[in-house]
Length: 221
Ligand SMILES: *Cc1c(COP(=O)(O)O)cnc(C)c1O
Image 1 (spheres, rainbow, N blue to C red):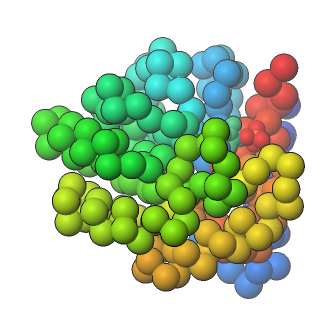
Image 2 (cartoon, rainbow, N blue to C red):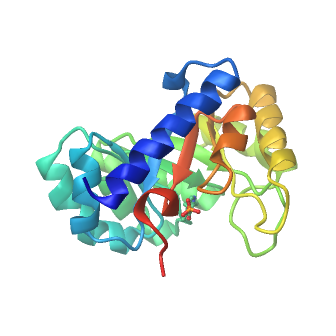
């Protein structure tokens, strides 16, 4: 076994334990293994250990790594977890199975057009900027309801969940609680929150997907 596979098994066990502690079945929480910066040789053992859901934050990097891996393993599910520019919407729709970072009308319109053109329907989540950080992507919490309605009514897009990246220097708990509350108000069930340092906390706050990179693949140097 490689180190990454040992760490993967440890993360899986911790997810199951955190879910149990929260009174939820372990199957409630999807582990998205974040493989950004790692090449296919580092990813393959993790696939061979049964992991099927992966996340990447850069489209060009993902295009270099994932077509061959997906061809070899048709059941892989690839999440886009990084910011999306509208001129990359075609590439994103072609490669990704889940796009977690829908956060403005221009992107929603570009995705809708590409989904129709390519006849591909990646699942979609909305990124929420829970910390209202100016440099960070995501819609402001107060604008989430309006944007969700425009996604549905103007763009014809079904958004199934919310995603957030709490400010790096703050306790993530209140941000996870805010996202959970917002999802309830909006009638959405998917909650992508929690990374290597705080995924167990996120599960306690209702995460249905955790995005874990360095705790599986090691530090990104
Ligand atoms: C890199 C990244 C992660 C994983 O971060 P780790 O701390 O390595 O687990 C999760 N979510 C997003 C959006 C990322 O860019």
